[in-house]
Image (cartoon, rainbow, N blue to C red; front, side, top):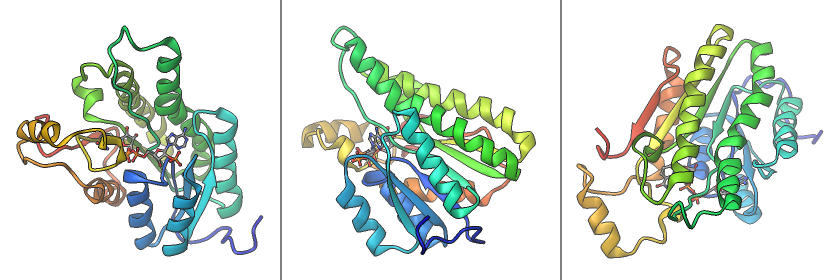
Length: 247
Ligand code: NAP
């Protein structure tokens, strides 16, 4: 155990997966500013993870490829063993994939489901035993508008996100009696690397479909995490943050 870690801290302890960039990074910064200890999970972007940890308080970067069960187990055990409790898990890690079903290989399908959906099953399976034991906790799954409405040429991605929302609802029922809440946040289009492939014309067409007429920001998603954290009577819900794109 590292010397500077605060075992049995009175501060809330959160784990955020896929948090080196984009929405996850913003959630980590928001939680840090609100007094949480945060285990920042990353996979490839070590430098970005360390930069966040150097600039914000109480952030502990931990490398794990969340599509691998053994690595998830290490992430959850590291968090519990070092801080003595886990109050919030945010399953944010995810990758996008845009191809027709015919062009999607079985390997692609496997990769998307493992990264976006199996990963959350693995984290929930591991974290729930600690949360059940402590009789408290909150799990937030970052799903997507596409899990609700379905997206053309994003069958694998949409399945993975719908699966997350189903997991949210099932686990909210299963874990509620242990005082553990489970919610989803389903963003529309948010300004991150994930959408960097969109050209100016494509963006213009897209924004025309959104009642609020613009892309969302990572801080607007991070604010939803705090909102759900601060209301102990909300569980099993899918909170949409999409500028009215799906009403
Ligand atoms: P992003 O900017 O592309 O960042 C993705 C993050 O996921 C990175 O930090 C990356 O870490 C991490 N990641 C990817 N594979 C991983 C793995 N196997 N293990 C651990 N970490 C992994 O994405 P984003 O836009 O912030 O999206 C975050 C979440 O929001 C995703 O689940 C996405 O599906 C969802 N979402 C996004 C939008 C949007 O418009 N942006 C809309 C709806 C839902 P490394 O770089 O360290 O590998």
